[in-house]
Length: 119
Image (tube, rainbow, N blue to C red; front, side, top):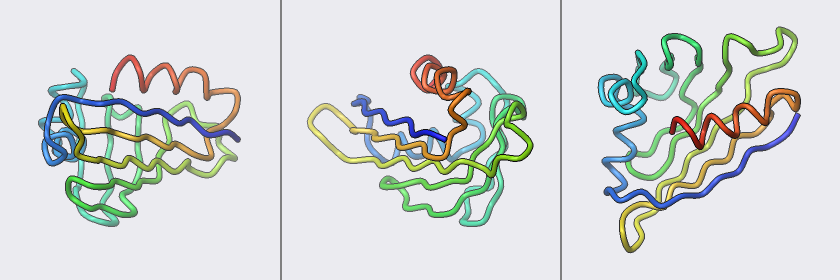
């Protein structure tokens, strides 16, 4: 298992960036793939036409998202990973810090690239 860490500044307000992740229609619009998100703690979600699935563990609007996360290619014997996204207002928009832990080592390179290319 390994960890993916990324940081980027997005030219939008923290609540807008949060909503792009947590609102099904907005998520689908910016990724170009179907998403269904129950935006409550304990709520389940799917993204990328069902390729990504998981459950919300902690939600603070405009501040933080913590989720259990896996894909349809996830090794069957591996537990879900944990995804934490933190939003911080900075000059020019929102600093987004992504910390994706417990990622199967053999898949980390593809997921790291996927976060950059598609999110």
